[in-house]
Image 1 (cartoon, rainbow, N blue to C red):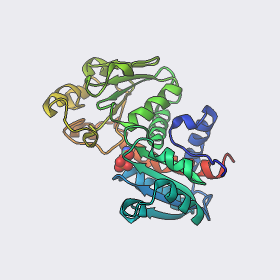
Image 2 (cartoon, helix red, strand yellow):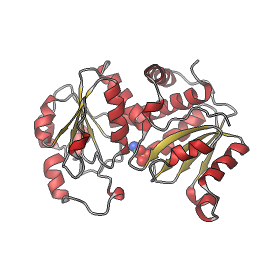
Image 3 (cartoon, rainbow, N blue to C red):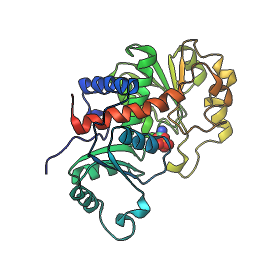
Length: 301
Ligand code: CP
């Protein structure tokens, strides 16, 4: 079996390919796209809930003219009839599917699919491991804002430990030479995250006045049993709210991969803030996913 290109994490793309995907995203967003996936069968396999990633992959595939099938876990023989993941992948390949978009709560699951599947696999989020297309759209949103990210400082705040978005976005920002400051309590952000180009801070109020961008994270309660600190303790130290917004630099932007929890990592004043970029992130999610799918299937044009 020929190993085809898949996207499991950002390391699967070199610097030129990253640039190419960003350029294609801009082109796809500017004009009605050609049907570059006409005749290509794509299956979206989401074993975990999703609003943004599922809808935007679906829309991206349809806009590029693909044949799209959405397979929910309860419909798969994998779920109840003892079929293995590997045999499911072989079966879908034999049926003529070229692309599988896979979300799963287990880290490494999309990689296992890619090993067995004669086609392209896109990781749409696997446990706390990686979420490469979210990272691409986050980085793209920042590039649109600031141009070159070298020397820019980006704070990622909250439950870094359980966040696949943070893990992929840190890689993306580091590769583009941004300074990454991770902010959170020890229980959500072990000191071991501090490596070259990435620093760990505990005091959000001290960090805020010196950053160009803040990426807020949801507490990933579905990935642990006991909340290590009370909600009130978290809010007191790490919620971005009206009081803390006064310390944000005038040109700075605030982002969130979604879904956001009002009252926990942000309050409603953030949604009114001039630098709130959530809607732009979501919009770029469609363009980025079109660019990724087109690149994997058709290569560089
Ligand atoms: N950001 C993100 O992955 O959102 P969904 O879980 O809704 O896809």
